Image (cartoon, rainbow, N blue to C red; front, side):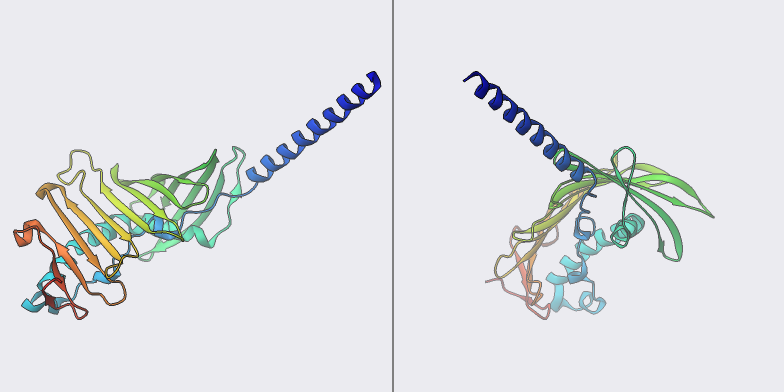
Length: 270
């Protein structure tokens, strides 16, 4: 019995040692695998369904859709002016392979062109537990040059289905600018929210939220809060037919939805 006990101890020791090596091997394999990049939709909001048409503004038949388009245009213009460079550099990461760094992080290093100007990007991603932490450094040579400006930081889950970013305004004015919260589950809804975080700014706390809901008849929505006006706007529409509705207490002086049909013409809401 004594010999059998020693034999059992020997076998147990071998099993524990084997499991230790297996666990170490899995951990090492995870460390040597680059974290998954968040999808492009985690950074860039969709505005294409409300690209404004000038002929609608002058036509009283298209008031409801025009008001919706103007709200969206306000944000899309702001995004274009302040986020074109960080958005383009983030998109560029998908065309390059990362390299493992000594501290365990992964580095995507590359250049992109924005409006005929070349920017150099260094995107770092480092997994910690079930999260990935991101940092984007951007440089530019020539006129108004800058080096390694930390333009945005972020965090995402390992599966790259949800996360957030914090963007800073510009190298010349490196104040917090926009917080971005996003979720993108292929089997569920997806959405993204931009929140103004400019310190002491009149629109600090204002936001625009875009959601693909899958609802019927309207399967997408914007919720827009103008902080300076204390006005909450709700826009719902069908991405295929383009028919939709808007609730805008400030513009319409009521709390009702105002609708438009597939052509963009005003209709009575059903």
